[in-house]
Image (cartoon, rainbow, N blue to C red; front, side):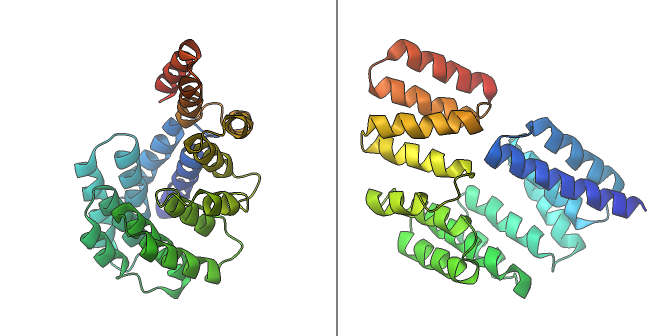
Length: 243
């Protein structure tokens, strides 16, 4: 019974993680509380350690502890695909790209074919290998065309390639309910100095994510570019308070 309870809390922790990091709909503290309870009741299960690894990396800024938690999950179950994927992404964020690619290659569960290509796309993008990242994102889209994630990856590749129109066209295909649609559009328009479109996308973002620091960081940059320095400072201060 304790293991079932622990798995439920681990699942809840990852839901809180997604809701906090992408949608800004839940406070990060709920994620940490759920991860701690999961580990307390499920020390011998991999899922709680994955959740605690994510918490330690994203919120506690403790990469050594996060590394240990991901490794602990894989010691318990070396075949656990989600643990392997999250550890690969952890290594990617540390700039350990060869190790990250080696980890994701160990994922052999066909049910994880989509996340295999997504993770490889992310790793190549972080490494600056945008052609390889785009190829993986297209393969992801071929398998699961109903997902917004491959579109997000493609947009994030085209921005540093300064192919802004391709990035905009793809961003407009992202679901209207997904806040990343407006984050990406606002950023691209800002880079092009298209301030009217920036304000339109930004207003959509404020409506959906008023408690997310990026929303106010973006608005601060928008006001700064237009030399509205007092308003820019207010927005940057609000972003700092929310972080």
